[in-house]
Each structure stands twice: as structure tokens, then as C-alpha cells.
Amino acid sequence: TQSTRPQRLLGAVQKNATRGDPRSVVKAIDHFCRNQEWAMNVGDEKGCILDSVVSEVNPATVLELGTYCGYSTVRIASLLPPHAKLITLEFNPDFAAIARQVIAWAGLEHKVQLVEGASGDWIPKMKEQFGVETFDLVFLDHWKDRYLPDTHLMEECGLLRKGSVLLADNVICPGTPDYLEFVRSSPRYKSQYFKSHLEYTKVEDGLEKSVFLG
Ligand SMILES: O=C(NCCO)c1cc(-c2ccc(F)cc2)cc(O)c1O
Ligand SMILES: [Mg+2]
Image (cartoon, rainbow, N blue to C red; front, side):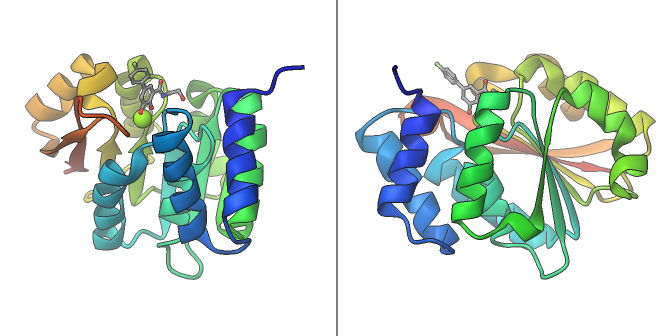
């Protein structure tokens, strides 16, 4: 039976990365995606921007929407302080199964809670299920048409505080026009665009960093 691309990506990690070494996991995935098969990880170029925002925010609580194979989960979790928590939501069970193994290979299970299901269902349950007050950082990288409704939902559920940072992938490609228009025009957000490229390509893409002003 045929393997899937996520399964082949996991194989590349298990073959080429060192257990317990997050940087080697990131390097192995980037090498696989550049040389064998493109995959929709945030990638190395946008990944460096992600790293700098994570380091600047130094978050105690992080929400990632869209785990895929766990590439950005590993990048973020490897930069978190000792007792910080990252909750990552993934709708696709096949992606989630691969991501769990990638995160485990990196030795980061203790920092990461991977939740399977729809963001729209789980966001309202965050406080009661995971004892979360508010998120210091949210990385949006899931279905592009869910960025805006989920941002409204996070506000309504009191999951954002003054200074919470939203960092959104793919605001140009595939694009999130309604989200971009909202965060750039709303008086409740201070937005900034980080121009980059679609992972492993020369196509323009970028990250939008938006600070919630309360
Ligand atoms: O759909 C995406 N993520 C949610 C599902 O896990 C996604 C898609 C693409 C992409 C795909 C096809 C193409 F032609 C161009 C871009 C890129 C990304 O970074 C992404 O996050
Ligand atoms: Mg993406």
C-alpha cells in the first residue's frame, strides 16, 4: 500500500535527525522538503521570522492552529521557557498521528498538548479543558478561511489579553484576505507585515503579526 507524504516526511526525520534534538528535526524536514517533496510546513525562511517573534514574546502560553506534521510546533516548543505550554490543534487525524511522532522524536512531548478536532469546537472549551486563562501567542496556520472567524471566537471567549500576539502564516499565499483586511483596519489590533516567501519556493508570502490592544 502507498505511503502518504506525511509518512515519508516522518521517515526522513527518523532516518536523518537525532532523537531529542529539535534543531536536527527541523533541519531534516527542511532538507526533505527542499530535495525530495514539497510540504506545507512554515519552512526555514518564515521559520526564522517565527523564531524571532517567539523569542521576543517569550510566551508562557501558546496556541497553534494547524499542526500538520509538527514542524512549527517543534520550532516554537524548542524556544519556550521551562514551564511554558503549547496547545496545538489539528483537524486531520492522519496529520495528527504523524505530528505526535515528530514531536516525540524531538523530545518535546512534555511541552506540547496536541488536540485533534475542529478549532471552532475546541476554542470555546480551552479554559475549562486545559485551564488556560489567555494566550500570550497564537500561531495561525490552519484553514485560511478559518483565521478570521477563529480570531473573533478567541476574542469572544476571552482568550486574548492586552498585548496578546497573533502571528498568521500564508497571508499572501494561499492568502487570507478577509483576515488581513480585519486586523489591518481594526482599531483593536496593531498589525505588521513580515515579507517572505512561500516555504521552499520563490513565490511571495509573508507573516502578519498583530498585537491585540484589548
Ligand atoms: O492549507 C494550508 N494549511 C492548513 C492545512 O494544514 C497551507 C497551504 C499551503 C499551500 C498549499 C498549496 C499551494 F500551492 C500553496 C500553498 C501553504 C501553507 O503554508 C499552508 O499552511
Ligand atoms: Mg502555512
